[in-house]
Image 1: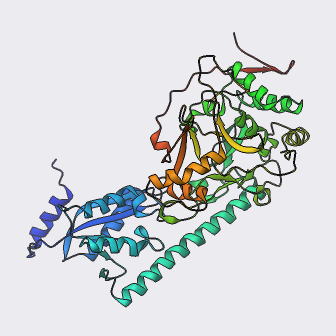
Image 2: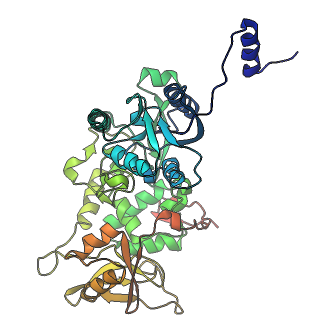
Image 3: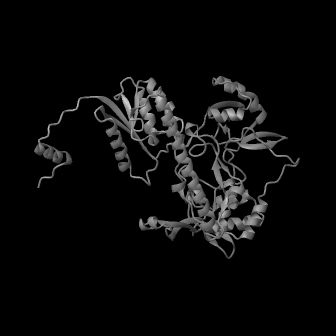
Length: 481
């Protein structure tokens, strides 16, 4: 039996009706741009189809779409230059041999946010490319007062929609964390794993088969968390704990869960990892949310979100802590408080606070690690031990520590910034962040380079480590033979 395609079927119907149709003449060549925010909760084909249908209806009788650009999983808050397909469209528009004359968009909110519209449309206009929007009924005219007012209104409406959704989501997450003790996503803490927590409280989500997830002790790593708290409560140093974990081959957090830590090597324990575990109140069985946030500006000049500065620890006053225990604790409150008091920061001998102007901005040119802030002889400095510390032994054939004083770097910075074509500013730290450059140090040789991102690094193969058991009779981990 012959099966007709949709085109063939419609052709048969058209011929049967004998309706005279005119052949459309070649008109304006359009590039279609569309976008969808997420790929997990939306159907790309459906989203693309309705945006394309609106665009085709808008340009019907004027021209046709000859090329498509469609971003998936990109928020409208990202600038066009940070969206892969949008940036490709801008690059194609600047080419002398571009294949389109204008850009058509199915909906304003799909493409623009805040003040992005004027920047993008002005750039395209200079290149001789018009932008068509259904809200404008055709091509947008930047010189038209009506279109100017319309675009301002649409931009404000888009910002309001995002702000309102953000506030509602944050309010709901606060309530879910504090009142319900819900797990709100992210990596489970070392020592825990995610297990089924029952039916979803939202009836509609439950009908779709979605289930809650809760934290439960991991049989391999949970004993080591308990051991760390016991050792630290007994007065043992953090470096000593990290050293023994490494000597016994205990899997570190990134090695125990490589799927969620692809950006880390998983090679060994470091002191900061032990300190972070001992400082995490979630091990008491409570759900804690909003411990960390981002500061600074990200793509498009926006605040917060993707690549918007460093992740910083929020004040305890804004944390959301569950009113009741939400999962099985790995440490009791008394032990946690005792450990936290041991870890409480102590003031300097003179009662002041040590401040480092270039913390996080100096990189060792020998091993490419960030140099540690180090106070010595009454002044700030920076050093790198090339991955060796009190938790590990340095082989004799390895290079010596790299050391540089902060005042020496600050004196050299104006010259280095000038050599890169910039005028030195009074606040060098703020200028380095603004220019997104950092300092490399090899002995007395100081240089500037752009920030490195995760895209610049090649994933390193992880060493395999055996799971260990804990003998609770002696309180000492045992390595299987």
